[in-house]
Length: 277
Image 1 (cartoon, rainbow, N blue to C red):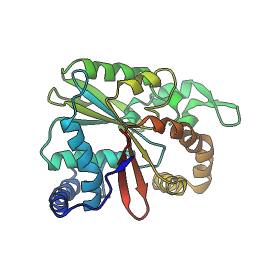
Image 2: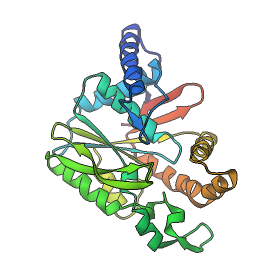
Image 3: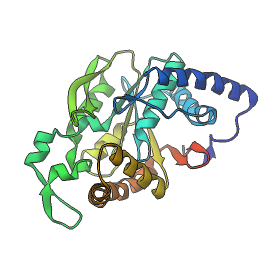
């Protein structure tokens, strides 16, 4: 395993610093959004030079299969997939690269009206409304995502894809336009690499698989802060972790071993990157 998080040389640091400045300006002006809002967390020079630039440059030099290349970013809940996607989008904008597109698995949530009609099984084996399990694999339209990714990979035509609204808490159809100039599409989501029906076929479509992770303490702190920001109290947060977030972490972690690139959020170094193949 080789690490891309080593200290940058002078030329590399100067280039990373120049691009990092553009990224910060673009993100502050709303050029990269997380959950529909400007991303307030900006990458450091080391994160730009040690992780973001190497990933985009690797893809620029890589020959993909099919009409478009697909890049999967899989991670447990709270690992920072949305932030990473925003950072990559902002980096591509700062470099003037228009061949990259970005979508999130959340866009393929089943609508709430559908979740309210269905039931699933909680951690104790009790049958409960599927809406209470929102965020588990069973609450996504995996078949719909598979069909869209297959179409994107086999033809270069313009496609309209859904997005997830944090205001409506529902998917919005045809909210994202993937233009013919997009050669590489990034897809982020918890379950993209899991070895289950439909998801297994999704995993096999990716030309590059990126795993993102963080320590359990970091995940729980981020998840608690996210839910608190949405107005949830501590009792709800704990119940939701036992019912949804905790089982999802356990379900996702083993699937990350298949990735080509491993990214990790650390307390002291921030985002670090290592390549597996």
